[in-house]
Length: 116
Image 1 (cartoon, rainbow, N blue to C red):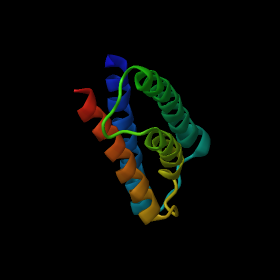
Image 2: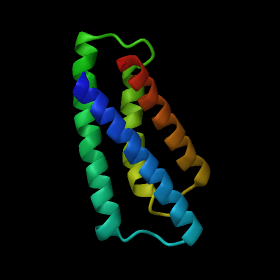
Image 3: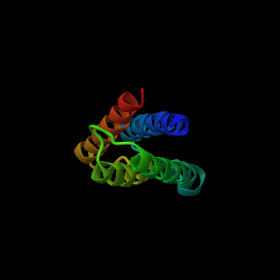
Image 4: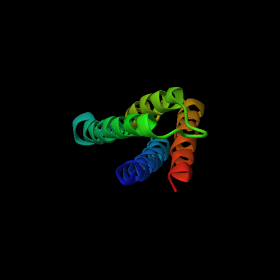
């Protein structure tokens, strides 16, 4: 459970970093360099979300979460993958990006509450 909590906290940081990067891209109007910025960030987010998924699935086998469901886990993983790339492109839809950030943070924070 400790590793799941650590990974969840790391993913919260990744989502917040993506959100900050998106706002910077919107302010400057400049896209991130794919090989220097986008790919390394997206690869790290993918690595963390894959490990997080394994830990969550392992936890589902031994524990019942009151407010977290399997469909939310899958959607959160997809959202993190989308956020980690779209954060570098100012032309990405603001509303859609914000919705991804809010729903992802909600699930991650809800999981952190249940782990404590």
